Length: 275
Ligand SMILES: [Mg+2]
Ligand SMILES: [Zn+2]
Image (cartoon, rainbow, N blue to C red; front, side, top):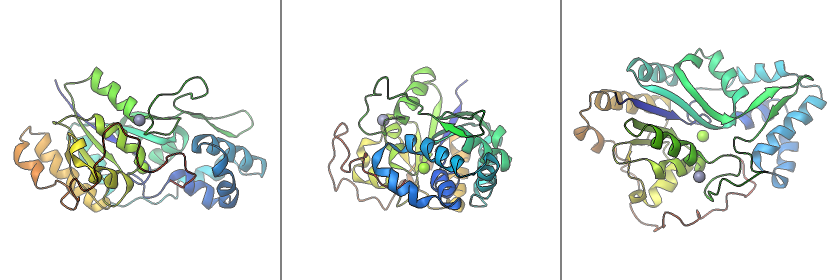
């Protein structure tokens, strides 16, 4: 039987900030992070930061304590539980790392609501240092997508799901520019929930015609819950036709900036900017 599969980005979608920045900032390593950011890819930098922090005496428990204080909008947890209770399968697709995500989800009592976490691998080594590796090992080969950072193309992950389980209906919730590539792959019966005024929403608004899925914007956790509950009522019942129209991102300036689907994005993704 066909299922509804909801794909959640993590940073600034489930939690209200970027977990990498949160850990670095809360433990007082912002300056070093900003210094090193222009010199290496973000994912490699996070592994380096864990090494530097470990060398300065930061323990894995310090990191766990900081992760457990991460801000989340109070309506996100009930929203996730509602989707799960409706029989949806929930998965994470994130460019953070497994240790951060599992620590936070466990703390919030949400880990068992997600059947899959697609993210950068990580583990605590014998010295107690957190090691973070790329999801895609770009030292061996490129994933070939110029929209995405070298360590992860979310479009490849979602493309694989679509080809293996084409009967399922997909709903993608995200905020960042890394969430754009997978949304170019979603089909007419799928749905995308971009966070309003965040990079994914901006990119979609530049040319909404490139997105086949229905677009439903949201601005904060309360809004996410409202939109998700509407989708639960309509998509789960299979009675979709009246549902979609009212949630289409009305604030988008449709088609004002033409952009071919295979052109590189206007901004250079390799630029050393914070997430
Ligand atoms: Mg995000
Ligand atoms: Zn990509």
